[in-house]
Image 1 (tube, rainbow, N blue to C red):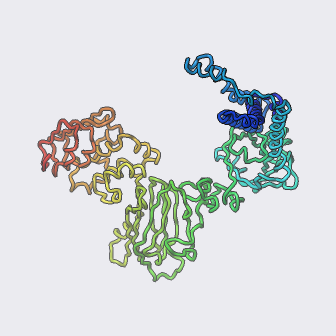
Image 2: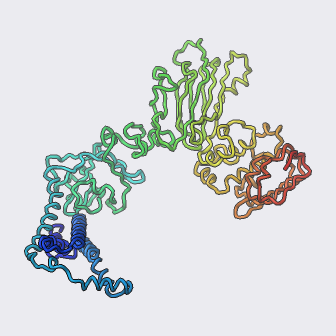
Image 3: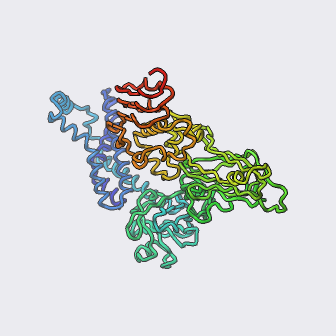
Length: 632
C-alpha cells in the first residue's frame, strides 16, 4: 500500500510537487537572468520559499504514508496535505476578490498584472525536466521507505533483544509480567523476532504480518509457534493483541493500546532500559521479596515489596535484617524489617536507645530482650536487643499518619533500658521531633511491682499527617507538636482533629483539605482553653469529657448552637453563661471573620490576648463578669 501510494502521489502531482517544479524551473533559467542584469533577488527568495514549502510537504507526505495502516488512511492524509499545500494559492485568490478589503485587493491585482522577467516566462525548462523532478522525488521516497523495512530485517537493527512488561494487578495477566527475550535470532517470523517470557509461563510475543498486529499468546496451550496461527485459532492460547502497526520494531507500539482476547483494554507498561530489564530479569515484581534492581519508582518500588505498609505477602520482610542499630545482629538471630524502603510517600521514625543494661547473670546466651514495632497493625521491625546498641539509632519507614506501637519484651526482670522515638524531618525540614520515650525499669532498682509492670507497657502514638503539619506550621511550633501533652493545642490536634488512630489517612486528609480547617482548629482550642482551668488539664483523660455532644458527633462547625457563620466562615461565637473557667486562648485571633464574641458571665482568668486587636471585623466584644486582665 505504501509503495503504491508513493507512485500515485508522484505521477498525479499535487500542489507540493508543482511547487518543486516551479522552483527548479526558475533555478534552471537563473543564469540567463543574471546575464541580463535583471533584478531577480526577490524572485530568488520566492523560489527558495517555494522549494522549502514543496520539500516540507513531500517529507510530511512520506511520513504520513509510511505511518498509515490502511488505504483509507492514506487517502485522508493525501487530502489533508493537498489542502494545506494549496492554502497560499487559495488565500491569494480570496484577496483578489476583495474579501479582505479594497487595499489588499488592489495590491494583489497589481502583483497579478505585473510583468514578469523573461527568465520566469522562459520555457527553456523542458518537459523532461519536470518528469525528472517527479521521478527523483518518487524514487527517493521509495528507496528511503524500503530501507526502513529491508535494512532492519536483513541486519537485525533497531531491535530490542529484551524488554519488560508489567500488567496491572487488577487484571489476570500478572503472571505474564516479566522480561521477554528475543529467542529467534537465527530465524524470524514475518521478519520480526519472537519474544519468550523468562519465567515458567510459556508466554510469547510475536508479530502477524497479515493482521498487522503483535500478539501475546501461550504456546503451551496450542502448540503454535507463530503469532498468525494463534491469532487465527483465537482460542485460550491467545492472550492479548496490540493496535495495528507495520513497524518493524515492537518498541513502536509500547505506548499504543493493548487488548485482551475479549477486546478489553489492558493496563500494561513496557520497559526497555535500566537494571529492571538487565540484572533484574528473572525477578518478579510484587512477590513479597524486595529486589534492589526493581526498587525504583518506575516499578512501583518493586510493587510495594520493599515497604511494610505496601507489601501484601505473608513473608514480607522476613529474615531481611542482619545489621541494625549500627550492630551486626546476624549472630543473635537477625531480624525482620524493611530497611530498603525508598518510597518517598513514607514518613520515617527513629528509635534511639539512650542506654541498655541487661542482666548478665542468666545462664542462657540465647535469651535476649525483643523489640517489636507495629504500625497500622503491620509489623515493621522485629529483632533481639543487645547492649552494644546503646546510644545507637535505627530508622523505620511508615505510612503518613500511622498509628504505631513500640514494645520491648525483656528476657529478665533485671533488664533495664531507655529509648526515645523521633519523627524524622517533620514537616519536610531537617528537624526531628520527639514523639515519646520509653523507660523500662529493673527490679534491682528497688521499684515496686506496679511501677515495674507499668514500665514494660508498649509505647503507642500516632504520627501527625503531613497535611496537618503543613497547615499548622505557621501557628504552632511543629517541633514540639508531640510534646506538652497537657496543653489545649495538643489535645485538640491529637484527640479531636486526628482522633488518635480512629480515622483513616483518607479521612484525615479530606478533613485537613477543608478550606475552614484553621478556623475549626482555632475554635476547638478556644473552647478547650476556656472550658478547663489550667490546674485541671492534667486530669483530662479524653477530650470527649470536655466537648459537648454536638461537637463530638458533628464536624460541621456552623451547625453548632453557639456558632454563627457566613459562607462557611465563623462570624459569631456565643459562650456567655457557659461555665467557662479557663483562659482566653490566643488562637481566637485566627477567627479573622469574627464580628461578635460573647464570653461574658464566666470565670475566665489570665491576660486578654493581644490578637484581639488585629481582628478588624470585630464589632461586639463582651468579656464582662470574668477575671481577665490587661488592655484590649
